[in-house]
Image 1: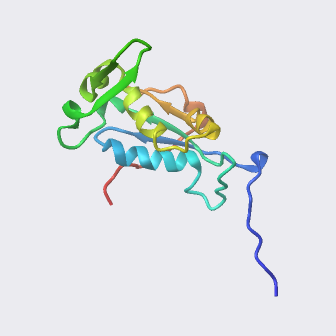
Image 2: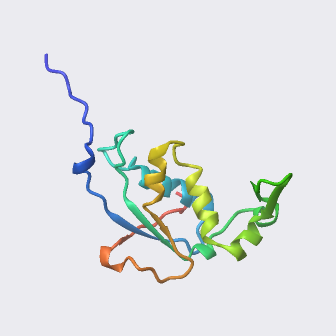
Image 3: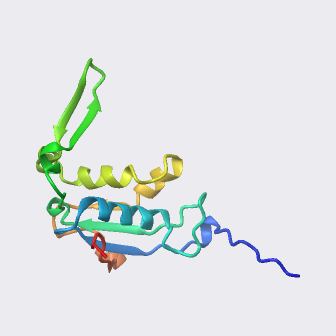
Length: 148
């Protein structure tokens, strides 16, 4: 009786594709979770937890992302500065100040909490407008964040 062998990807043999995602009118959480799956490589049959098997993702129009309900006013981003107390700002103010950070933080918090997540996040490229400097990689358009 023959037993099946489990495939384990090796770092040198992983082929990484480039995807282009347009965030115009897409729901933030749905899109961030699908981007996290692509960065981890869970959409591939060759997924291996301890190897970075994910693809590159280029996101354009991140300033046009949508949140449902009153989250633009109610959602608070907080951080510690080293001084007593915490700083905080609403999602709407952060969108006006630096729109890339809203999507970046959402994806970052959906990735595993280890050293491999830093390498995965380096493959995420977020831009506020429609222009991006990654035309030479010929990214394929991918529709994410759509309700199924």
